[in-house]
Image 1 (cartoon, rainbow, N blue to C red):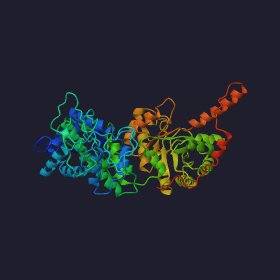
Image 2 (tube, rainbow, N blue to C red; image 1 turned 90 degrees about the vertical axis):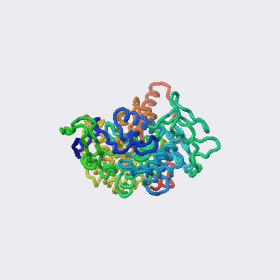
Image 3 (cartoon, rainbow, N blue to C red; image 1 turned 90 degrees about the horizontal axis):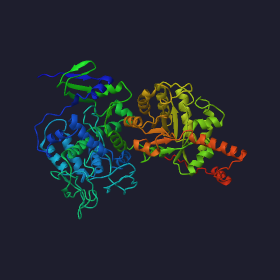
Image 4 (spheres, rainbow, N blue to C red; image 1 turned 60 degrees about the vertical axis):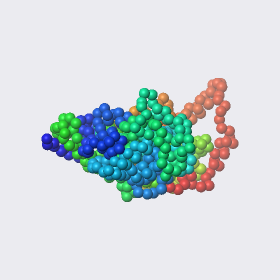
Length: 617
């Protein structure tokens, strides 16, 4: 029977096809192979080439595995891996993160499998699959709170903050860009699917109740044998391990996808050093076309597609038409390991970060209190806050001027010069740059940087409640990065404060990060589901404004928020405290005696710097 091939390159059509459950990845034709010992078996068992219930089940295994891998730990670990062939480095790093023994040997085997994964047969690749099945991942933890992993480390549990130097716990590099309904492109790093199978002690294994322990083996450490990180040449000692074939296949599939798509992303980005990673994803995607086959009749863009028809999706062309790229997925089918893949790529690229930028790459969000004068900033720094911001409302009100009306450029610059004499990192709220002239905004940013600022907030909201054209705001961001590349640009969109603009949020943020923004800020956004959806499509850190009654700092951290600002809250609380103290004294009520002493406040004025806290890149 003859089937028709349909090609789509419009953004709306490609996105619709990706969201159509009738269009599924096509499994390459090949003869059946022995279970656990052939590429044919691998294709038949991974989520990548399945759909329907098998796909959902296999994808769930991957998602459960990814949930315990912290992207920030992966970025940090990848950054210390010696440079080699990119594909080899990506896979070796991921294999080590998954707790697999002999990660270098794993990388060699995966590269052999990758050569025929999407079509073809090869006896050497079949043998490589068999070896990989014999080398499952040890149950490891790289979870939230784990910040550094290094060679020799095998277990990094939640809350751990330091693992010995050289630890090789690095994260999966989710590399799949094939998303879409029932697409099995799932994130990097899916390893053991049995979370109940854990290692309680040396040589200890637990088998999930009711599941046989057969076919596959684990390489968990047993007494008298070397650990996975101690001797890369030693053959691991197999012990019974409760790992279903789908778990082993999913793990291998993730490594293969890392070998292809994540490595391609790193190679492309390395050759385009001046482009933000978000622009590389949009303009030079690692996978330029995707292929689907119709599991049943359907319709895309008014075109009838019969069962068995082939659908070709031009991802590169579609990306050119919309700021939010389809690379690594599009709602409702976001790649579950997107953040892990980008973190791995970012770490391997080793692009320099300033000390302030690094504060956004830690295991926990940067809590940024906002000051309105030198004393408030110095007092906050004395309490251990890693950096402080300024509040435009506090600066404006202190000067007797309205906030958000582009009236405080002089007051803002004056404060920046005073803060620049301190020993702390600070970032400046500059409203919309106090001008719609791009050159003037760039000049302001350069002056702020020269005054000592480590960062700048630029917002697209206007005094009348409208939003600036997103192209204009993007041009401001690009101009600032051109004249002050080390200045951290936090691009703010007021879509949740301006009426009827919430649906523009993702588009504006995508354009801003592609223009060079180092972070993005959405004040007024507090819905956890909406926050998580935004983060799933971003490359740069997301900043949220803390709101009493909204998500807690811990809840925001669990969603993946990297920076939490207090905005004008502290200034308003300080005003309230001052007025309350005065009226209590006037009216004869008891007053709260808690207050810094005269000497303590006086000492703040002498907390001057003897070196630039911004350091080098």
